[in-house]
Length: 413
Image (tube, one colour):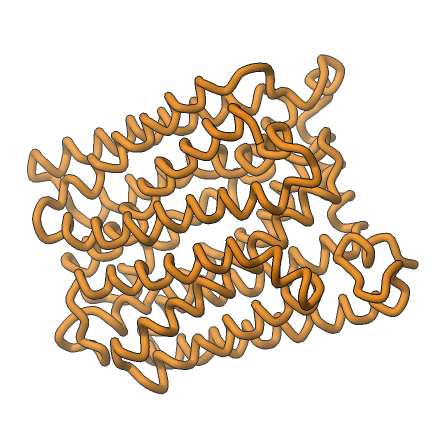
């Protein structure tokens, strides 16, 4: 792995440190303004709604234009958005609607940055190094997002709320500038593809995803898991933080939960390749998703910080291992000229339900209580894992090896 991957890796670390501050800081700011589950869930919905609206177009752009330039522009744009929000907070204009607007606009930029990053990575390393490279990227993401960013966010909310926007603004600017160190051109399509109608290119990606049985099964399962987890964590902050909550955590201690998650995620990212070698790709993926789903019940049954922190570590291990495996599989299976568009179609299915889940979680919590959301979301996750296990196990008997990989299953008849 060479110099270009190094710059991409450092940029990923900086941008995900910013993500971590914003991801934890924004809900904590919301909780300080209102205790309404519906209003708090708007913050989570605003951060994920752009995936539903823009994922397909972002993927098509990644296959048309220079992928590095798209990432630079997206990072600098969200830096400007959050700098403006920080200025508004300094002037005493901070309220729930400014918070939602800032998170929404930053989410728009995130769609273009994140989708393009997954498409540009295979252009910086050899195919045989994809799992190792994705493991390193995932480690940087978790360290920045949760291990460092989360506790910093907890401190900033109390000490200087405007810095919840200002610190990410500086980090996103640094991430964009680091990408300028990557040498060469990172354009997948040629001039002919650039002249094709955008609608036709998007339709081509959707057909490819739907006709590919492994990618289709994984995308549908990821969509259900993300919808349920989005509903769960949109209101989980109300279950965990505040004097009236079942756990009664302070904001700083809530940030420590994400530190525990990040510690597990780093371990899961680094060990994902070894786990696949020991147990096989299919067993590793299904086992990770199943364990992660069952662990959602623990904070409901045992609403204690001492139970929450070990569970957060296990959430990190299982989530990161499954994520590295699925991303590497997509990068191996999808042709480079289609990678941006099919990745975007996959993530539209996989992440498009997140704003719906967040909004649904808030509505159900208003009517039936937060506990009902947490238990219901767990049930949806378990059903989703059962569906993908059935879909993949039906293909294993026709795979090419005695210990099949997901790529083998996709080639079996």
